[in-house]
Length: 93
Ligand SMILES: [Zn+2]
Image 1 (cartoon, protein in one colour):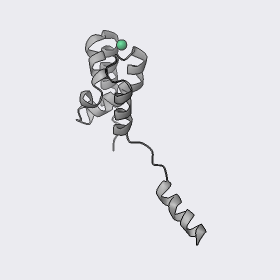
Image 2 (image 1 turned 30 degrees about the horizontal axis):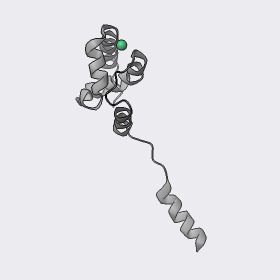
Image 3 (image 1 turned 60 degrees about the vertical axis):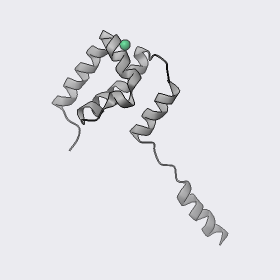
Image 4 (image 1 turned 90 degrees about the vertical axis):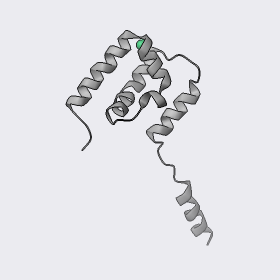
């Protein structure tokens, strides 16, 4: 019986991978009121571009990325290049 109980508890303790939105929220709270560096924007820019292409509103989830893109021509250029590349080869079905 104890075995069965621990098995049952194991079922509910199964870790589920965080969704993109959860990752974004975690990033947001971690970097709240901080400026992102170009390196940090680099790490997020592909998610940002994919959300943009899905018709979602990435600037809502990644306001700091959006702010950085507004300020940093280099990263904005990279973002636009990435958008163009994603549009040419859509990864969705
Ligand atoms: Zn930058």
